Image 1 (spheres, rainbow, N blue to C red):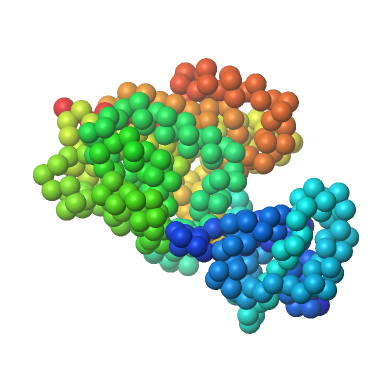
Image 2 (tube, rainbow, N blue to C red):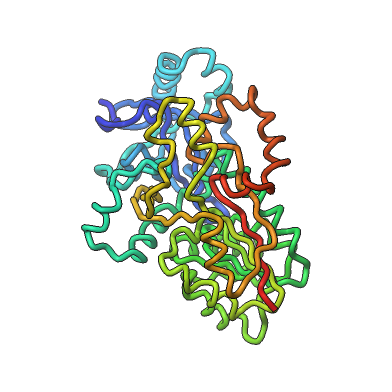
Length: 412
């Protein structure tokens, strides 16, 4: 009996996504694991009996499996000697003897993950541009925008860190953004993050500053950040706060008579703020004179996107951002997102902030949704990363990347 849904991608027939709960932290822990189906159960091998995911599931005796849009709640038991023997044999048939020998030298731990009831269905975590709805169809449904955004990011929260960590361009952009941020901070600063997600940047930066107020509109993102704060002993160093960008001055209730020294917003969080014109004024109210604001925003024109699709003869996909807003997929939900040209974005802030620096993020590397294509040829074209570091802050490349990183300073 196969446990596979009828419609799954080829990769999803090779791997299943296992979601466990950290034994100590309580945080979601996600891995992609190989499997075979036996008598209504997913049977898996652990490369090592000390693997975190294996220890997690054995302690909890349960977990979740994700396969495309299907989510299974599973009970976890150790396989019998006979079940282990059959599983190893099935692994060899499915994946090959060499892979089994190299990846599973210790086959003593074989687990049965048996679904408890029927699977539920939720939106598959797709690529950012892999949407099913166009804007007119979404608009015709008369959905509340803020509610849609909250639902999308709530849905993405559990797998958010895993999704980012699996994407080379996302990791590269995050580190570049943090590097630019730390150039502007000192140990006494109070920082403010807008659209913190699960707080990966805040956790990395917390040791370099006095305090970070980390804000997001998603309750589930904030919940995971609160768990990280407890697990990492960062209480008082990171203060999670649920609020949208257009109402960011509400953090004054946390600040008291203090002011923010540096604010930041990465990975296009501001592209999902429909009342962005309110944001600069709101932000200005809680920042000290001369304070810096660093943010990355997705552009209306991406040079590398146009070139790569052109080389692949995908001419209709060379300028997908031309018509705004653009539908994007977040947590398996399709939501509208507004992209901006650099000059348009600067104008929105000009009454309260001056532009000090503009950097392509990345300037000539591909956007994150094309990361897999780049990684496949990175050994051949890796020199592009060296060129990137030289030209990313130069005109016009700083305006033609997937995103642009803006460094603003509040007017005195």
